[in-house]
Length: 475
Image (cartoon, rainbow, N blue to C red; front, side):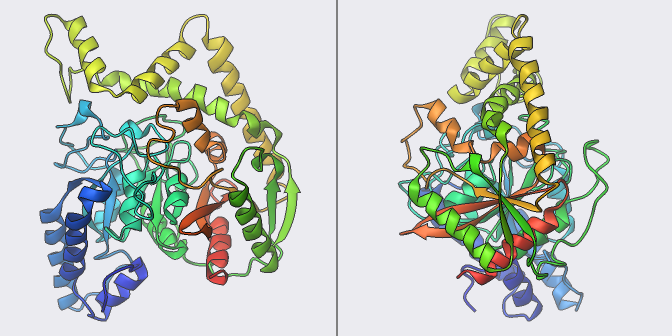
């Protein structure tokens, strides 16, 4: 049996039917990483010995006739801003280049307990700050579809690894679109769960009221399988909720009669006309499958990007204050404590990190917090209220994931304001804490476009069901 392009379900069935061993599929992915990582740069750290040890345990269970769990023996990758005990966790930054994690993130622990095999830690924009995968201290990640283009960020390595068949699935983090945008650019399914559904314990905090962990997969069923394993309460994260379920149940239920809202504010002047056409065709496909398409308005979402780029840097500047050279990570040589602080942060952080720390410190500073930070918090409430109102009339909201196809490496790197606009359609879900999924809907040549589906709080089941029906009926 060929081991290329396998889904989680394919691997599960192959292991169960003894078409290959867990060691064989693990070695396939490790060899693939070894062959391709110099070109794609998806992985920062490869945990080959750990993966092989885990694979041997799974093979022993199969040999003894034990029943395999859905993710057991399935090789995956972890974004390198999530801790894994005794393995480097760098956040793709010089300041944490040599940091070894002293504990594991809850999501890593849950997946290992489920029997999944971890292959390593993936590249990202430094501290998850970016939309292209180009700000990493360890070099830019390339899009496997076209290596002259970006894979999207900040979960660039996580997306590229799945798209390039270097792992079966991966975990990313999404603060303003960092799972969904690379999913769109790499032709994958990317799911950002409702804020609080998945524990953030062990995720290096960027913006604590926005961050959420979710899967990048090859299809919708795989996303549902992974979410079923990582969702649920955690005593180490007080924002989590006591909700657990099997998200694969009900995927096949009809979408006939579901009301899908299409917000006029998400089809804006300046977006790529081909992307707009493809997404509108995808929405028409959902109508053909029995859904009712309703035009809606979310007037305050036009402020979502501005709101995000005030609140996110404010939280970031507070969260990154801990990286000062005293407790862990890189420490600059200096003659006194103040100089050590300054030189550590000056030399340890990249330009994008420093830019956002400065912005966040400014909007929180005396005399400006009322003008910027507090007004942004009020706008956040208005944006949430817009979604609450609309979800009284519709079940799901459909939008583009990105206003463009994946752009060229270096094309927007020196223009941060233009780069920030890549998140224009994704940030609203984070501002409101809503679940959202991106799935491929069409391609132009080889370049994919993404359809985004946004749901009510904790209603991942419905957006997964709509995504599944679209995926199954459009080939």
